[in-house]
Amino acid sequence: MAVASTSCLPQLNVPAAKQVEAAQMASLANQLWGSSSSLVGQKSLLCSRLHGPSHASQKVVMTSDFEKSNPYVDELKKTAAYIAQPGKGILASDESNATTGKRLATVGLENTEANRQAWRELLYSAPGLGNYISGTIMFDETLFQLSRSGEQFVDILKRQGIVPGIKVDTGLQPIDGTDGETATQGLDGLADRCKRYYQQGARFAKWRAVLKVDSDKCPSSTAILENAHGLARYAQIAQANGLVPIVEPEVTLGPGDYSIERTAYISEKVNSHVFRLLNEYNVILEGILLKPNMILPGLDVPTPPPEEVAKYTVRTMLRSIPAAVPGIHFLSGGMSEEEATLNLQALQAYGPTPWSLTFSYGRALQSSTLKIWSGKEEFWKAAQERLVALAKANSEAQLGKYRGPHPSPGGARILQALRLGGAGK
Ligand code: 13P
Image 1 (cartoon, rainbow, N blue to C red):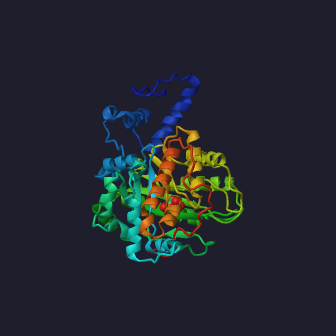
Image 2: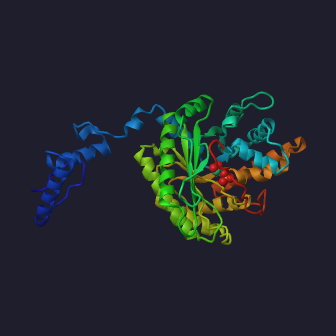
């Protein structure tokens, strides 16, 4: 039996010897797909999937039920594309109250609500910040806060063209029986919180999963599976409620002499598991943003040059991130402020890539800004200028046009704990 031609696939000239094989294939197809009409029906269905329904009378499922029933699909895609636009990145300012307290303590400030509010107001109201920043991640308390003159923070941000975002995970808990590996908490009540955040003006969310790496057993398969699952379920809930999920699988920079190749290998595995699970949960890839680590060796290994970081980072992303994702927003992860800019710039040499390669920096935008301010009104303006200069340097690096000098040259790695452990932190 020859395989019948269809109108949409290329015609094949099947030699006689191949016809037996084709018949076997047709019968296998019937067994697999339960079709009564040989491969023709299957090819028609395939054609209709590729080119629309005109070739098939069957009901054709083009997308998942999740995508079809989601009223926010267009908005999610637009928001993600807006945030990932060329020359812009994200200001991560979603430290919990406890972590913010640790940061404020480094410049001698008490952890009061008034101090946290003043610090965030300094960041969000910095003149010109919106030229370089397209989104800001906030903490629950901050999303609902007002400036000292009574204006909602979300309105200040929107005026700057900056999309307000919200951290929705509630911190890390140890996974029993592992070598200090963690699971991210926060799925309970997440849908209700997302609804409240959307109402308050948030349009994207963040959930940080942390994967510990060493030269031996970490991350364990338990940790990879647990964290990939958490990210996927969170992403689905966020999209169901109108928030673009930032998916953050952070293979975290830590002590040890593990090589850059090992981080690359582990990050590729982790990313691939995460996208496998995102697919399982029908998460709409055009409506997410990815926030991974750049590829760096352990802290006991000398800091590699930007070209080496870029080579492994782009290779890892090309191997593990689907092209449908609009933006890859790297975390700074403990790099110094200048290192974060130089590495971001080096990535662009590999372009054009299917996604934008940009930033979602916390410590690399805030550290010297906070030091300059130190809670003193007279340094408010200078601190804002530093923040905008850092954002501008990273914007130029995103465009591959950064020429320096850097606003915060040199500098050591910034390794204060990013997040304290425990639910609610
Ligand atoms: P860093 O840039 O300080 O790593 O923080 C980014 C972030 O938000 C991690 O969740």
